[in-house]
Image (cartoon, rainbow, N blue to C red; front, side, top):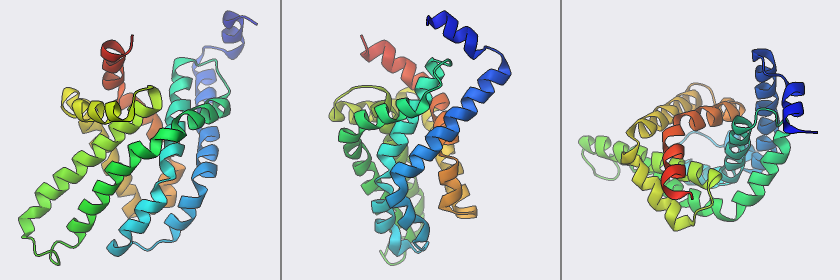
Length: 228
């Protein structure tokens, strides 16, 4: 069957596009929950005390490969609307990203954990109150850098050290992307604080879709400058 025939059968109207999008989001959500289940099971049960932050970080590690696969599947759906096999795209992305994604996620996650613990125990650390501002700025910068690295790793085949450099480079090269990611992280933190981690996990594909849209300038520049 030709590509043109496939696209005609798929449809090009808004209803067909919406149905395809919902199908993709629901499928990758279920697969994400399946892959991240070991960490999520503990994460939901962990109390919200600051002393549990290292345990939370350890539970969040399995979320990295799973979220990377979500990004890959949602991105593939965006480039080929007639492809109604998001499960295949998810597993392909998961297998490709699994060997190196922990190397991408671990450094920013460790930095963010240390910074968050210092912020939570500012008085115990003997730091003046004004230290809250620079520590928070460094925490947000580390988190945005980590998200940049995850997006680059999910969509491109660069070496880990190059991914780290590019993720840092695009913090300032595409400030709109950095600001958008910071806002997206703030929304995620607000949802978690207002309700629970479970609510955030149910919205993972929506956040992946929003992240890819926010990251378009960075993705386009990467393709232009670093992909032959």
